[in-house]
Picture 1 (tube, helix red, strand yellow):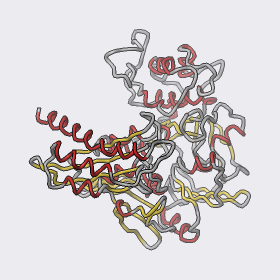
Picture 2 (cartoon, one colour; picture 1 turned 180 degrees about the horizontal axis):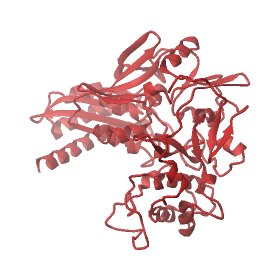
Picture 3 (cartoon, one colour; picture 1 turned 90 degrees about the vertical axis):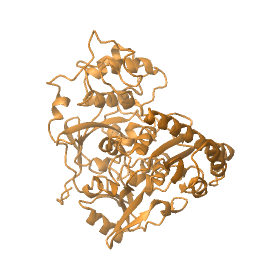
Picture 4 (tube, one colour; picture 1 turned 135 degrees about the horizontal axis):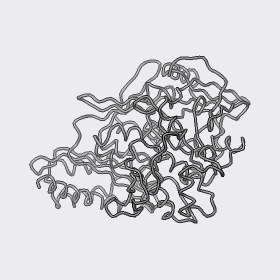
Length: 494
């Protein structure tokens, strides 16, 4: 972001610039859209779990063009969209001239009450415009084709693009049929043509309404100075956590500092010693840029909430909130990650295993920001991420476990195990690691270490799981991991 003068806040919605004059600084994009008459977006859960509020945000692609990225309007502070461009369901098509996505949904019977349909249409449209989606469907291309896997259509449509959208009455089969029947965008499609141009550049924002302030600094240096001067300011990036607090608990912050667009926090670099990931780089972008080069994270990402959440959520936010049930800490602990913390006095590096000090507490000072996560190289030979939850996707974990193991000549030479959901903080399973290192990687060692792992942490009982269940899941996790490594070893030797 360049250091430019702050202009009157405004958002481009469906091709038209709309000012944010007098809008409360805590207002979400969803509430603002509905207040301006764009009621297609709906509030279902107000937590980012149902996708009824989905809209498309113009974000930059690697080639300098634009990508349509679906996000939850119910979680995004509207001032975080200052200078940005969005498309809602109303901007896709009209009753007289339906968008291809809307047309296919209607043809397939993909809507009954219609409450969730605008959100489905926006998520589906973003996938429709994905440049590398693949071959287009046509009249001769069957919607149900055994040659394609269960999560991708014959037209290349990735069904996980809809993983954050829930429907309570239609059922998903007709919605999937509509997605798999989509062809390719026409050359004269305005939303397709828009992708050739650059996405809107981030702008500095400073809005004060009724005594509350929303600030987007132009540079990291400016942000750090603000935190030194105003240590009680609330820092937000993707706002996937604070947005829930605003909607469900009525949280109101007198001073919000948005860091989601700071260039210094959105990099991803690789050296011989580590991979450094910017703290404000959206998880979907991290996943795309890494492209599987860190297998443990590749296993984590599909299980982290939904695509809609990952399009906004960040490592910095997940770690900064300090939640003991966040999904990224166990994986990063297993990877031996270190955090880069910065203030106006400079920066320091902290081992993630030493970062958490108590429930939602850490060693980070009030005037410090997490600027990056560093994952040391080389990576462990065997890794896994186990998430125990009530739903396969888009759910909060009851227990999350990250494994990273090195085995040489049948003996464990290195072990790191990260745990979440079993104590007041994420933690390393140190006793279990000690029970593994220096011993044969066989069923006898695994059974003995599993008994140790079952006693790690201080799991509690709540509405997600009992303490006994959490302990039992810990005890069985290492056995499952062992069986996976045996299978992996056989595949490699074959």
